[in-house]
Amino acid sequence: MTMRLVATRVLLEPLAVAHAEELVGVLADPALYAVTGGEPPSLDRLRERYRAQLAGPAEPGERWHNWVVRLRDGDSTGPAIGYVQATVTGHGRVAELAWVVGVPWQGNGYAAEAAAATAEALRADGVTELQAHVAPGHAASEAVARRVGLRPTGRLDSDGEQLWRSP
Ligand SMILES: CC(C)(COP(=O)(O)OP(=O)(O)OC[C@H]1O[C@@H](n2cnc3c(N)ncnc32)[C@H](O)[C@@H]1OP(=O)(O)O)[C@@H](O)C(=O)NCCC(=O)NCCS
Image 1 (cartoon, rainbow, N blue to C red):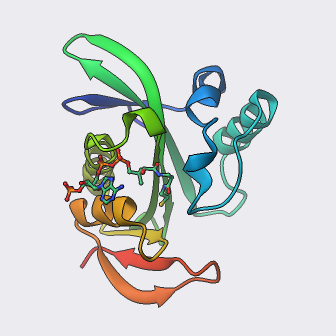
Image 2: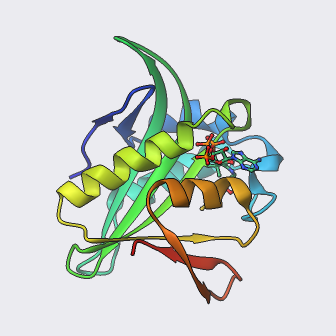
């Protein structure tokens, strides 16, 4: 089960299909896809994607966690600003992370805070190895990976992204 996580300035809500209405605007800026590729999804595409993500993996022994990242200020909550994903494999011990924060909110440490909260929750749930694939030279994403304790391995995947891993 994906838990709701509360950090200092953001909270992470388990994804629901209804989040598509809020996220479609966050994900509409083409600048978000400059490094990773892809394009802004339509509302229908996003709903479809979220249904598939909530249905979970076909692969037995694999688990998916999807969180929407929302700003918080004390007891009040603000807009959804992005998402964090974790794919758990290796008998629950390995988690691959991915993060996206919408352009207007970038550069405020929100991705680092959200990823750190995710990493902590996953570790509490038995994960011992965290990973991420990051495009070489994507400074913001590399910095987020570093902030959650990951280090570059020098291994590139078929998309040319480098594997980062917890030591
Ligand atoms: C990568 C991304 C999630 C970072 O989000 P963010 O909320 O702006 O990141 P943060 O503000 O938490 O910054 C984290 C670190 O990156 C650094 N950083 C942020 N923007 C930067 C930039 N443009 N260039 C260099 N470093 C940058 C910050 O200084 C911070 O470093 P520090 O921890 O050493 O101080 C966001 O840029 C994004 O969604 N990009 C598009 C999608 C994407 O490529 N996702 C990655 C897939 S793995």
